[in-house]
Length: 173
Image 1 (tube, rainbow, N blue to C red):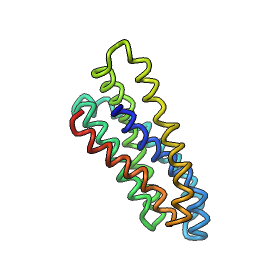
Image 2: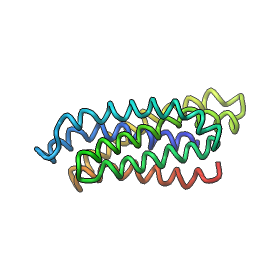
Image 3: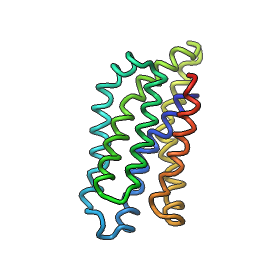
Image 4: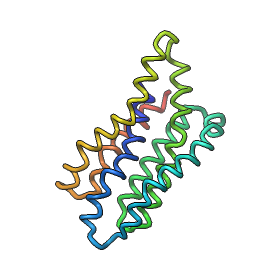
């Protein structure tokens, strides 16, 4: 279940940037150029592709549990940068979080193969793959409410909290 805890916040981080974009544009009316907001998914996923290329080396050097922690740290750092009040930080946050998510598939697969009996791997890997849609659903349910109640920056708080919990739980994986 640990890779699910890692996958949910990392994919939730991607979804939160996309889901909150319209709210951000409305709330900052004129404070952020719309092209900057349009670049965030491009920067995020381009950085994730680069991160994936380096993921294998990171996993080989530090191990899958530590690589998972780097994913979580990247998502947390990216979300915190995204919350800062300058358009450059939105792009930087997308870059940092995107690069970090590049490590998750390889490290999660290695952890699951190591600790899951062969007879249960199909089910467990299927559950791992639910991380992206589950993260998207959590963000879709919480981000609008939090953005309207507390401001758009707080829409990222659930993802940061889940990622911090997973980071702590991942200490002994």
